[in-house]
Length: 479
Image (cartoon, rainbow, N blue to C red; front, side, top):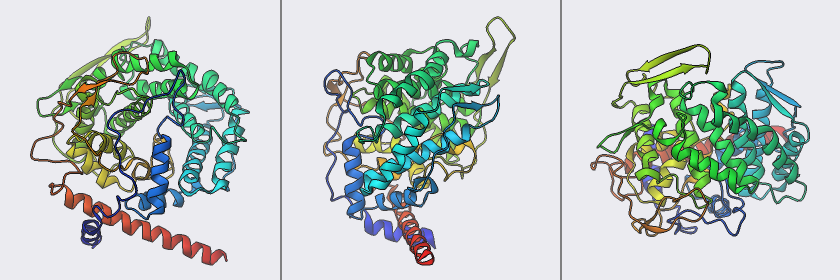
């Protein structure tokens, strides 16, 4: 019944909610002067203004995405932080890293909610949370998992802080010091020596979490050298998280193997989400990693999307060396893509699908189908209580849904020739074919995917209405 209602509602709504501004941006944003553009991590000022205008206009699917945000317990302005001086993950006592990621997601969600609704109390809550942590946190400890904690929670802390950096009560300098002195050193160290292990010991998501933190630190702290380091590692790094090691084999059908598909589905989704995060943050500073190496990331993300939807994908046997330098050693071979649960999802698809199909006008059928299936995307707290449900900040349906660029066929900006942060120059037309020609993207009129996206739009509309009714009933009971 929901599917039928969704198809009808979605079909009626196609094109009806796109009257509030149009997206003309065909190339990366450009940072002004010597410093970086702010806000300029996952969200720019134009992004935030678009979300607010679309929700105010009642446009789908933004309203469903915003309803998902406001229903999350972390997005409430009554949230109180519980800062710790030392955070432990994997070893040490107490194992308190969950306190950190819950507070960071509360700060991010309240800050995002403020930008959409204009309700000052949410900005004040985000600032109070971040100030509490920057005034107390001094170190991250534990097993090798401390590197994951530094990377994941570091890039997330920076993104939450970026949204309130102009708030009068926000301790910006103190937040920058926490990034420089607590989160960044561990992430930078991991990219340099990989915890004294052989470089292939750790799967891509380890590198990518560290890479996201390093890039976010450089942008948030206006440190060009740190940004250059992150961009160079993405392109040419020795570890498995650099783009050619994470996506080692490109096929002629527009798909490219994601190496961690030989491990398991959950970690492959994490890796794609993290690489997308790195690409989006770089894009917002004028650096096109999305398009690097003939849009290699697009081909890898398409592969993971198809595989996660239950499709058959090839996998080239991959043997990686394991062990500590000067210590034990061994190897491990993955011979095929692991089994998947098509019901498993993470809030990673809307950002990537909208970049390639809406900003760039490319076909990405598997990405759009995965994004439709996941909509409306939630965030931390919507995907289970464990740490894996907090690896992405999420809410992509609200934050990354875009109108199609007015001239998507215009020449694309070339990939940044150096990690300088300079705006890429126009001239290279996209040559990638991201999926079989029989599929078209979500923005194509009359495509085979319209029904699927229409159904998704209808379901999100139903979800939005149910959430609104739930909140009204709660208010009634409280009154």
